[in-house]
Image (cartoon, rainbow, N blue to C red; front, top):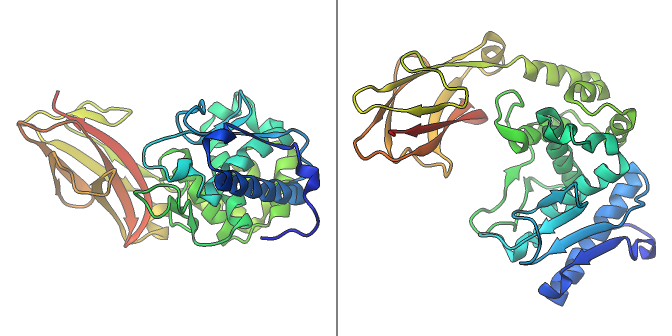
Length: 320
């Protein structure tokens, strides 16, 4: 997206720390991307009055790419599998810049309480993806970020907020709803200016979005383990001669909206379990067996409607 008029007023408003650790070409590209994102933010959300700080390279203090509220700094550190410190992904840069600018412009969104609140965190992630999409609309978020993935996620996913695990997956579901319901940037600005940063308040953007969010909130999957003590974090030590029984029961609203509901299992890499035998039983019930040499493993119970992934839940299995 190209903006008319000079960007001279942005001089001094973008501070890139550690610039000597990247090439001149990388530095120029990063500055252009940041200038474009700041100009786009100002166009739709109001003036930026505090310099944007970006710290890059091996000496960047962060362990992973991200915005640090305490230091008001975006970090692009050296990390495994990142392409050029992650600086080749315009989407990721735009996403992190939105975090920084929304914290400055609308501080009620980024209080310590909000940054520890799951509702606040998923809203931040969803709106940052939405901002990145509006700035550079295409199908995928996060191309050219990692050398082991073509992209990080699809903007228009089938994930549901209620069944997705963690702030990034739930944020992805929020972004998808905003795009599917045709929400505009002016409506997001009105939401941010109202002063209540919650999913409940987001519903008031439009009747269509309200209906979609309320329908999503009605979805639930009961998960039971009848033959072992229940674990709130779904961590189970499986005895060799005592298979774990895991039962999933989708509620009526979920089945009405997703009639082809099914459950599958995979590792975080999308592979079958390497250490446990998982056998499907009647309905959405499963039996998990361990072997003598089974090792600890994190698995995902994947919730599908036919071929569409609508959510997941992590489980942790071990034998000791």
